[in-house]
Amino acid sequence: MEKSSVDAVRGRFSCQNMASRFALRPAYVAACALMAAALPFFGDIVGVVGTVGFIPLDFVLPVVMYNVALVMPRCSPVYLANVAIMVVFTSVDIVGAVASVRKLVLDLDAGEFKLFSDNVVG
Image (cartoon, rainbow, N blue to C red; front, side, top):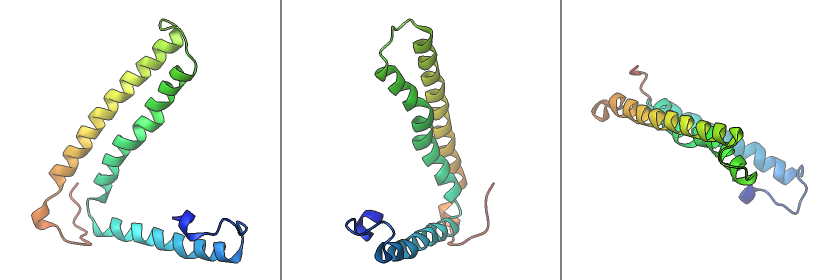
């Protein structure tokens, strides 16, 4: 968003760049807040995105990259510990993704959906 709204030739703190930042960032946050308020199941969607996107990036990918970058023998304790971390957190991620999708499906009653509803099913 900022790449298309700022001028790279001007300074980072030029008036044009600062004005676009002060206008676009609050508008973006307001749009996200409006969507979160409009959808009563927004928290469930965030749970699905978290299990699919953040757990692999935080726990699995770093140890994979460590094993690839520092080629070590396959029977070394560090390599085996990294493989164990990958297996455990991949399993936790799969269970979390299934549970998040299940909760989203069970809590989502499309027939009774109303915008800006405060009737949260828990």
